[in-house]
Length: 553
Image (cartoon, rainbow, N blue to C red; front, side):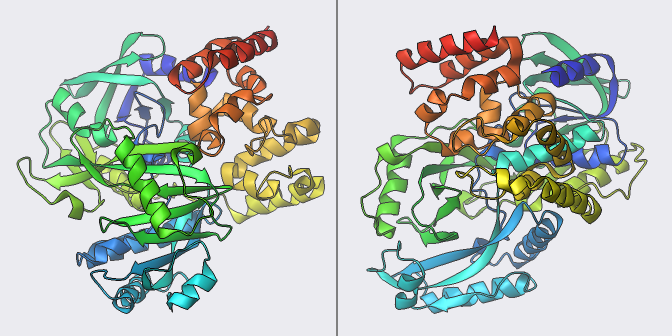
């Protein structure tokens, strides 16, 4: 909490070269790129960082194989290059995974023709991944018994990549990198509108935690508000070449359906792609693809039933999935960039490619659309645009992305081995501690080693099956701007996505986590979290509140 408080003080007092609105993937990489290159950057978000679209994806960073059907070969080429670059830059986080796809009888293309598309995809992807292979019906059954092959004509296997941790964690690590390079960022700070005079933007903002109003001054403004870009441009009277259409995506998370670490890809009953994605000890299934008129979205009964019906029809399960099997839900809109204010488009065919509109006279930049796959390109492109707008870029050639050097990694691995760190891994964890800590924190994992060395109890899990150590929670409290309990449970970690709600509430370590994260505010923050959820009983609330109060005092 001290980090946020200090940053708010700086936002009130200082002027900035660039103010970025929005802490999703586009805003995060813009901040990381510019701050690493020596630009004085501020970033705010009306909610938590990656609190909207960037925390509700499929956790896939793929090269856009579906765009082959619409003959967008140049886009697929660009996305494959971006995917490969991302995998090289973040080998611990962005990993290759096999996709197993079945083609149902009567599909619009025969299986072998679709398979040839995966060969073309592999070729466009510069053979960076394992080669695809065609699978007969019999081979499909042997490879993945969970697939119902009764109505299957054939299938194939090919590769793309996925985020080992959740998407929100991946996005936050760019925010954390920006903070390390001097960016002044704060979550839950909402822009109320901006005006420009004498070469400076004055942005009126509200601290959504305290209700306080103040002004942030900057030479350049970057609108990276994701699905809310159009809305903020209206506030600032910015006229752009692009606007957004919205597609709602929903995923349901259930207990693990298969032990095979593959993404099962199908064409759902309406002809669109449908995924069954491994998520540690759980499985993420979906998605829907529904046009909506506004950025606000929620899971409807029909969304839920569509996913469950397709999963039950395409998989051979011991028992059909029902609503009672759903552990968590993800729902967000995909902002699709459309050129032309009055343009009409087939929204289903719109790609997720990004577009950046520039008003040079007003020193204003708007970022539309975008995918996690293309994030490094967005960061580089924004830095070039800011330089063209006349802002000095002291370290223009600075490489701002990627994991720490092999020297730092070797030192971390040496120290971890000396401590016999992996022997401290909790039996419920799915990977060794050394691997997990490096992937999540990079060079900052050194501090965790020191904490564990001084106090071995820091290597204990605070919440059962959550894969978060006491020392990780302590570091999150100090460095990750945890403002509300949900920030930690759903975005900095994926605890809320893979652990049933009641298990979280009943976990003996939750009260200690609250105390570490919020100190004297632990009770209030816990009550705030309970108020934002709707499936807990009053008895559970009262019991745990008493425990929290005792711990806090």
